[in-house]
Length: 635
Image (cartoon, rainbow, N blue to C red; front, side, top):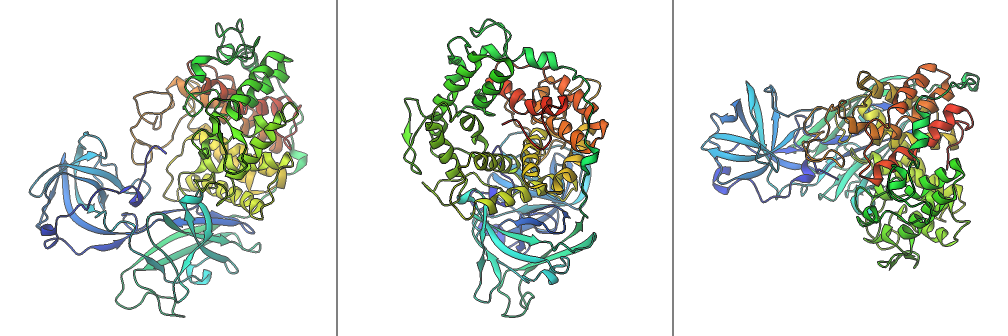
């Protein structure tokens, strides 16, 4: 993860000197530092008969100081507030936001470093940099909040009422309080309860989570949800904070959206030619097969199956290898499309090196199988779970079954070596990991290798619920979403579409359509470039390097960088799928626009980008040409 945000990111020494505390305002109970005192994640939109998840981060005591900002300084008045030394992890809030101050973006505070201080005049730098913040206009009531690290995540809070009726959920809703445990891949598990039976949270490793099962007969409409926490345990049977305790209340609107169903009669039956198809085919190989001349052939010699040593020398853990985005599966698909045995050699060589035939092999603690670079650091992270290439090749080498079984083991919390598992992240930042988990579980089911574990199918459903929540969360502007990077959404679309293919979950087309609309509204029709991240530069879209742009920023609201086009094919498949199931030709036209420009900004320096272009595009072509039913995906 490129950046940690909120209370959980604060790890420096205590920020406030003992002498200064006497003159400061009384610390207040806060949860993440924003104006309402909460750091939380979850969608506003809920559906009858389905589950929605929310989470709430560990709390911290806050020491607020009010000042006014002008130029590049913040002047404190009347509080006698004095610090010594340079402080870090300063949370800034504002009732009136000065232009230029990155704060209160979707109700989340900005984190700065106090890089210069003279008495009660403060100067702030962007966290972790020497870049001084300049305020282009004067603002009043800027609340500078110092969060002493000794208190962060160490104070328990109690849920004042654990009853759905007290919170305002629709009648008949069942709520279950739990925790999101980072050591188990962010999985939801039974929560802590106090002596009097009230849920509580403690420590920075755990986040209190809420599972809300909405009844199938819930009427469409808005419901005001109110959740109150206390810093003291409520009395038994009394669903309110004790007298004299500190408390904080979060209020938001949950909208029950009626389910809609698409009719099979709407499905498209006419299949126009696809613009850009010739280029898509040509870039599969194009060259002499000796790492020269064409893009595809730069990564594998189709005569021998040898992989490009430059690419492989980066090791499969590196961020630009062809292994990413299931390169073994991509070569296999190309071999079938072209009738090319050389591409199949490439597929097998890549799978064997990543699976089990490398000098660095270690015995996996789950199964005892010997695995290759894919596993070199133990359990792979959630963004490197690629079972489909192995699954496609078990008839060529039975050892791939063992590899797939090991991948399956990473998807079960608490199994094996105890390292972090790939999970369905009930959080604001795990859409990619949740998508890969669901995609992998469904692929493993298709192989008939579903583990004999009672949580497996429960967790598949949870993945789907969480992904629906992720998409809705940034569509309905709940207030918290770390990564609105569209190619993450594209990976989520693949997971949800495959879930729909298995279950016909009616929510899937209901969230796919508005996300397609949002994507295309941000698409640059003049330059034919998709937007990378629709957030402005700020706490959600940090000024840090990305994997393909070098020392620039996170492409915040950028739809002019031609390098963005290499991500087109990670998203456009959803246009073709929705066109097929809805019959709405708008989505065929829009999908064609995106697909036909995917190779405009070709980046032939990385095997990863080549692999991205073919990961989902076989689905796009199959659905668009009509030879692939929307009920199926290319495996």
